[in-house]
Image (cartoon, one colour):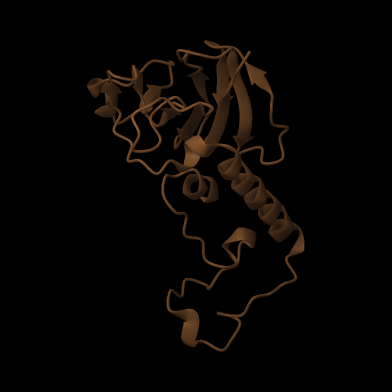
Length: 194
């Protein structure tokens, strides 16, 4: 959930304590509670510290890749002047999604290709940011995801796999190769430039 929030466009709204798994035991109106429901326990424990480190990593990635925090609304339309689409939805076979894919209730894994060359301000010109691919799998099992081949770049570099939060980033993958996306996970990759 933290990766979904921090890789979404717009301003992420995080409640203090979310970064280490603090809970209010389901109470959404805990401000008036003077009890352990609203108190912070700063003894995070191993799980809390691991989640905090993971959250820090997500925030660093959001800060490092301007494509993840564009201020323009994504349309998915081809900009003929710049010859680029700001976002392209990719199915698990590495191809652009079609209407039939969106209507397929069994499809539970897809990608969102955020083109770093898309216009990022009101000035009509190409950006020079890195292209990012976010893959989401809501299926409970493994899905073979084929890496798409965008217009530019030499391959994909792993930024994060939520199923392996401490996995080494920068692992590289060729266009057209297959990554086994684990169930209920989110992954992010950046285009590898020559």
